[in-house]
Image 1 (tube, rainbow, N blue to C red):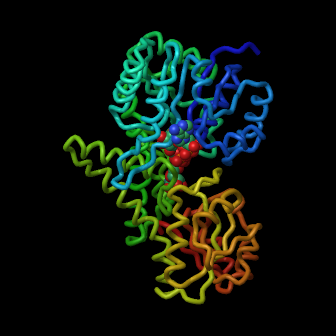
Image 2: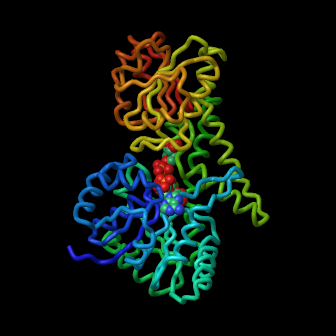
Image 3: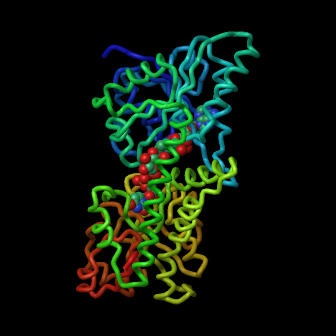
Length: 442
Ligand SMILES: NC(=O)c1ccc[n+]([C@@H]2O[C@H](COP(=O)([O-])OP(=O)(O)OC[C@H]3O[C@@H](n4cnc5c(N)ncnc54)[C@H](O)[C@@H]3O)[C@@H](O)[C@H]2O)c1
Ligand SMILES: O=c1ccn([C@@H]2O[C@H](COP(=O)(O)OP(=O)(O)O[C@H]3O[C@H](CO)[C@@H](O)[C@H](O)[C@H]3O)[C@@H](O)[C@H]2O)c(=O)[nH]1
């Protein structure tokens, strides 16, 4: 295939590695840059530092074809590229504000190193107004160097989901391009065109609206989840069942079924930090975002709903009790543990004197570096977890937990009781097996 566009992607995490790989698969030449030397060296050997379905074979294929270059050298990458994507992390600071240290450091380095005209595209999730700040940082560096290269800063927020990141990138619902520069817009459209067959899916807007669209989308989805968790909590006190309510509500075409699942709270690297950052954006301009503050508060509380049910069943003191935990990652399909509800649930069990035996298909190695070492045991098979445990807790709904052998569960657990944080099972089926079943919103 003919090489089309030379691209630099800065930051090879979930977003950068997937974005860079998908662009390279179209025949573009992509320089994937990271400051983490270990990560770059591993990638050069075909070792993918994250678990993301379909990613490994695409990386290996395109690395072998020399469509991807893994490097820590930003200067060489920029020299050989016309477009540069910023894909570094923007984690929450202590006060909730997005920490833009890495983004601004990169803007500075781009200004210091670029030696021809460049389109600088922000794919990291950044607060409204960041594009203007990136522009001034680059301009200042160019001025200090006494050079006059042209550059455009474009906002192109990313909407991929972990676990389906490759699919989402190759078939995006929409591609938002925030820019007022026709040439930059045309180049980005050309780059994305093979993945965006339906051109109505390109949405062109000003840079600030593009930045805000990303936060508003995540905040809307987080709001739906907290809303349903609130409904679930009211269901529990009134005798209604949130599973049935979800069907009743979602069937309205104006509402739809997605993101209405009650559970033990949303986690991950995006919703928690982006809701906090949007609250901060509002406060910084003298506005108090009341709905968003409640969305966040409901989510914090929701992580304790399962532990409260456990304590209601066994009492506040869990000393001497061992809990089997299925699932650790913040959702199925990923090894990502950022803001995973399992962290809160397991720590609360340990605090109350209990111990934990756990299994997750992908995130156990990472969990070992995050969870306390004492009283947490890891096993390599789903059903091994059950031996000598007093109860089973389902935290992450991986497929292999969806239709387990209930007979075995009932016989192996010391007391046949399941606490289900993801509403995966049928109350009637479990009662036939003599299993006491607690779930959310019933
Ligand atoms: N993870 C997602 O599902 C997702 C989806 C959409 C948008 N986003 C947003 O995209 C951004 C990146 O998220 P992520 O999950 O890919 O982060 P990540 O933490 O997985 O990856 C970030 C990478 O950037 C590298 N990095 C940090 N500073 C650097 C520097 N100065 N130069 C070069 N590399 C540097 C890190 O070493 C790391 O490899 C965030 O703003 C996030 O909110 C994430
Ligand atoms: O009905 C639902 C749907 C999701 N969740 C939870 O919500 C969290 C986030 O899930 P999901 O949105 O699937 O995962 P992410 O990979 O974090 O993706 C979100 O965050 C990304 C980063 O900004 C965006 O790009 C995506 O569009 C957005 O969906 C997880 O803990 C889920 O368990 C629920 O509790 N109920």
